[in-house]
Amino acid sequence: MQASFQRVSWIARVTFLEAVRQRFFAFLLILGAAMALSSVSFRVLDFGHGELKFIADFGFGGMFLFGSVLAVVMTAQLFFSEMDNKTALTLLAKPLGRGEFLLGKFAGAWAVLGVFVAVLSVLLGVVLWAREQELLLLAEQSGKVPPTFSASGLAQFALLQWLRLGVVASIVLAISAVARTFLYAVVVGALAVVAGQLQWIAQDAILKPSESPAYEAVLWLTSRLLPNLQQFNIGDALVLSTAGVESGAVLAVALAGAAYMAAYVFLGALLFKRREI
Amino acid sequence: MRRLAPWLCAFVALFAAGTMAEHAWRGVRPHIPEIGRKELEPTLGQGVLLGILGGLRTVVADLTWIRSYVLWERRDRAGCEALMRAACALDPHSRYFWENTGYAVGFDLAHWEIRRRGGYAKVPAETQERLFHAYARRGIEILEEGRRHAKTTTPLLLCAAQLAEIKLKDHRLAASYYQTAAEAPDAPWYAARICAQTLWEDGRREEAYRWLRQYWLTRMLPKEDGFPDDLQRLRTMEQVLGVKPELRIPRQAWER
Image 1 (tube, rainbow over the protein chains, first blue to last red):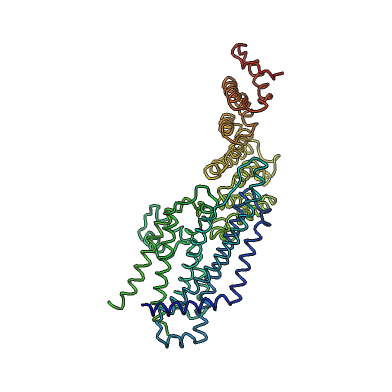
Image 2 (image 1 turned 180 degrees about the vertical axis):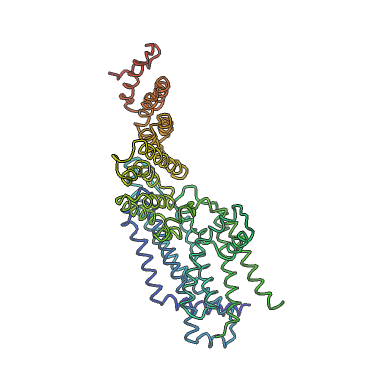
C-alpha cells in the first residue's frame, strides 16, 4: 500500500513539475490575475450593483473561465504527452499499475489547479480588501452602511472551486483514457463542462411532475452521471452576503465534489486498463 | 461476473456521488439566482450563456444591459425586452435592471408599437389606449416580479405607482403603491405627499387627510425641519374639509 502511494506521489510530482513549467499554465495564470486586478478599473461599466459584488464577480469569472480551460486542456495535454512521446510505455513497463499512473496524473494536475485557484483567490482577496477600505472611508463620510466581504467565505469559495476543477480534471482524464486524439479529449471535455454547468436544469426538472416515465428516467440518469457544476457557484452568498451559507450545505457540496472525483478517476482507471498503448 | 464487478462498482460510485450532489444542490439552491429556460431561450447565442455558466453573471448582465440599449435606440420591442429581461434574470438582486425594464416596457413600448402601426394620427384613440394599458400592466408585472427578487424595492413601488397613475389612470392602485413605498423605511421624502395627493384625487379626501396627518405626526414631525411644506398641505386639506379648529393639528411654534 505504501509502495503504491509512493509510486502515485512520484508520478504526481513529475506531472506537477511538468505542468507548472508549461507556458500555457503561466499564460492562463497571468490572464486570470490580470482579470482579478483590473476589475477595479472596469467598475465604470457597472449598473448599480454593490461595487464589491462587481469586483468579486470579475474574479469569480476569471477563476471559472480560465480555470476550466486549464483543467480541460492541461489535463488532456499532460496525459497525451505521455502517450505521444511513448514515455507511458517505459513507465508502465516498470512495476507501476495503470490505475496508479492515472491517479498520479490526476493528483499532479489537481495540485496545479490548486496553485491556480490559490493565487487568484489571494489576488482577489487583496483587491477586495483594498477597495473595502476605501469604501469604509467613504461610507464614514456619507453616513451610509459600508459594504463588506468575508475572507473566510472567499477561502471556502476557493476550496469549492478547487474541487470543481478537480471534478472537471477527473472527467477529462476518464475521457482521455478512451480518446484516440488530444483534440477529441479537449472538445468532449469542454462539452462536459458546459453540460455540467447546465445540469441543474435536469435536476430542477425532476422535481416537477411529468407524464412520461421515459423522460423522467433520462433526467434521473443524466442528473446522476453528470456532475452539477453549478452548485459550486455560491461565491456571492459566501463572500458578500451577510447571512452566508450554512456550513452543512458547503460541506455537502464539497463531499459531493470529492465523491464525483473519486468515481470518475476510478472509471478512468478501468477504461485505461482496456486501452492499447 | 467478476469482470463486470469493477464496472458495476464505478457506476454505483457515480450514482452515489449523484445522490449526494442532489442533496447538496437542495441546500445551496436558494443561494443561486434563479434563471429558467423561459429567460434563457430568447437570448441564447448572444453571450448570455457565458453568464449562466459561471461567475461572470454580473459582468454579463451589465453587457447585456448595454446591448439592450442598442436595441432600445432601434425601437426593437421584442429584442429590447428580451435582453432587458435577460439582464434581470442574470442579476435578479439588482434594483436598477428591474426598475428600468419596468419603465421601458410600461412607458416606451406602447409608443413604439403605435409608430409601427402607422403613427398617432392613424391608430384609433381606443387602440392607443388599449396598447398603453396593456404595456403598462406588463410593466407593473415586471416590477412586481422585481419586488420579489431585488434587495431594494421602494423605487420599484414608486415606478409601479407612476405607471398605474399615468398610464392606467388607476388612482386606487397608484395610491396603494405610493402608500407602501411611503411606509418603507427608505421612503423618499416626496412619497407620502404624492400618496396623499393621489388619494385626494381619487375622491378619498378624508382618508387622504387622516393618512397624511398620521404620517406627518409620526414620521415627519420628529425630523429636524418638521417638513413645513407637508404641514402647509395638511392645513389646506383641513380648510377644504372644514375640520373643526380643535380637531386640527396643533399649531407648531415654527409654523408661519
